[in-house]
Image (cartoon, rainbow, N blue to C red; front, side, top):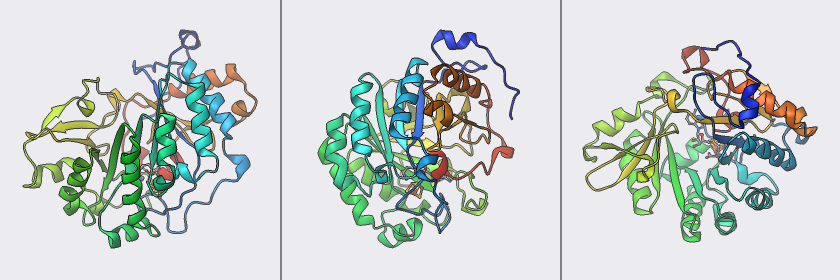
Length: 339
Ligand code: SAM
Ligand code: SF4
């Protein structure tokens, strides 16, 4: 449901983004590239995305300026994503600079892990607080099938390197696909727990109508509830830290103190507690993952126009729907939006 834009310039002076139903937005997910070295079949077409030209994506200096303005508006956590963020040249240097420029912000990265063998030590040294890693299967043949080009050995070596390097929080993200990996959940969860990672199960979201099929969808709770492998689950605070829930994941703990996160964006809305905004690699603000209305920020970023940028962000965030509905489906693919 898209509501009319309500503009309230006073918000800009309050130094925070609070939308018109009172949600405080303090978490930004920024895509640094639309490109990827994989072609996951639930995320992009087989021949990949068309690929933005260099002048169509945010430069690192643009991203730093964006972060500065967002920090001024109360954003405290920044996650960099893609496409695959580690394929962008200069990413480690950028993250090092980010850490220096924003010492108090939480810094996180989402990656397919294929390049972590190369970059984990750098990432840990930079002080990355958290790393989210895609892990949809532990079967090499299925892995190749879902990613179309990937080699599971790179990912297993990559997650091992991240663990050895000492990145404090590592989460695995598994997109649940009926008939593909719903039977593999016990193995994937055990792999995560045994390695000290936090497993999260993500429902297959219908972002790109051409890639999503209803018969491939299975609700996370259905899988979790049905398997004899699992103990009874009790709700718990995010990551057992006592934090107030603010993200899409609901966390559950079993009698053996094993925790799993469920991102059931499709079967159960988490919109009421959503605290995030997204910016695509092309510099477009998206108030809601499922919302179609993007606000183009690139020119303001290039011109370093802080006043206009603040206003565009504040105004754009007023279009955040109270919750998404079925008419929002097909709002683009994840590699373009940034996951
Ligand atoms: N390349 C990185 C990766 O794979 O982690 C970062 C970008 S990827 C778009 C971010 C997250 O979005 C991944 O965890 C991926 O599994 C998830 N994703 C992509 N398409 C999805 C879909 N249709 N439904 C649910 N999750 C999806
Ligand atoms: Fe690439 Fe990540 Fe999309 Fe897979 S999910 S194609 S790794 S961006």
